[in-house]
Image (cartoon, rainbow, N blue to C red; front, top):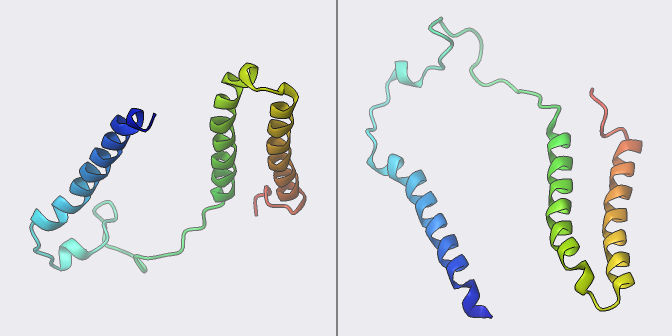
Amino acid sequence: MPADYGPILIFAIVAVVLSAIAVLAPALLGPRRPNAVKLAPYESGKLPVGPARRRLLVHYYLYAVLFVVFDVEIVLLFPWATVFRDLAPRWMGLVEALVFVSILVFGLVYAWKKGGLEWE
């Protein structure tokens, strides 16, 4: 059984190595000739007005977090659904899935009641 995970491990190692090369190669091999024009913020060819760094309020981060949580829920429920018939006591597998989903629903209701889903 552990031998079956060999290709997955090799794939993960290759992915990490190639990602590291893609991130580090330009920093190590690229030219380093900064000057005032290159370091100035680009504003569509116009002269920069005001500070280059301003705080940008992102209101949708909570929606992104909720999407990720419920996306992970679906990823975990798909394998459960495929092996549901093979579970020894079927009712126990159903109870486990219901507890898992109910915890997520209670979290969503809590966020809703606290006003976390409201735009400011």
